[in-house]
Amino acid sequence: MDATEELNGTYFYHGHANLTPQELFNLILSENFANRTGLETTSAAMILAGQPWLPTRGKPVGATKGTSVASRLSRVILKDMRFPRGVSLYMPTGKNISTLKFTKTNRVAAFIGRSIPWLGYAEVVILLQLVAADTRRQYNLIARPKDRIAWASF
Image (cartoon, rainbow, N blue to C red; front, side, top):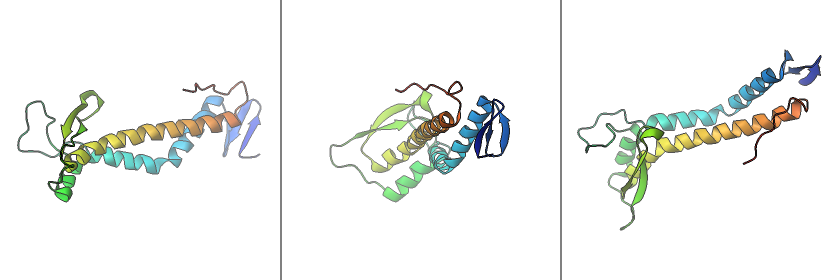
């Protein structure tokens, strides 16, 4: 048998025999997710580095308590570097999407430190979209026409 074949109405895929269409889809999804794991590790590291776990002396009322490793390191490396005069950028603050707020800053280190976890979240979304696209393409190439999944194109 080849790497992918049909047998008695079931599928054979990479050594797995008698697979239903759902099992075939799950194997392909798992395989594609594993192929992109390096990207996922980077996302997780960025998200974790941006969590406010380190204690701080004091913060204004309503501010997120604590600071992150990313914020502390960017402040050490970039010290008191500021954007050019008159430039203030909105930076994301908060631990997750439900606490997300935007505040202005003219300090480069604060902007970078607070943007890192959100870049990680964006990378996770991109990872999931890439895995879904790869899975869709590969599954629909293998599956019989009646088992194929019609995906919406947005």
